[in-house]
Image 1 (cartoon, rainbow, N blue to C red):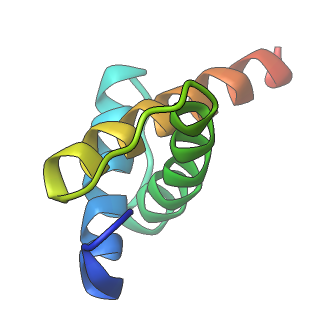
Image 2 (cartoon, rainbow, N blue to C red):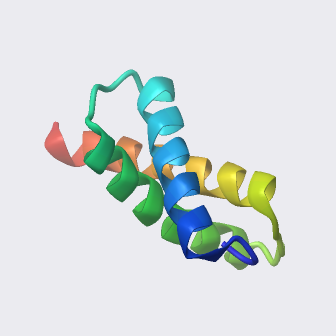
Length: 81
């Protein structure tokens, strides 16, 4: 998450986790949404970096984090089955 700062990363993580929760039709709490959003940000940044894209700012960070969080929840769903 380039250029958003520590507090911004936390806010983006919570929102991304919440969005991923709604997209994947799950039910988590605030702390779980934060963790899913922050781990999703790492996964999303890795995936986007593999394709050679660069991003910065709030909106792009939120999109990448949400994409990574959805991917994380999908992978966890595969493992649990």
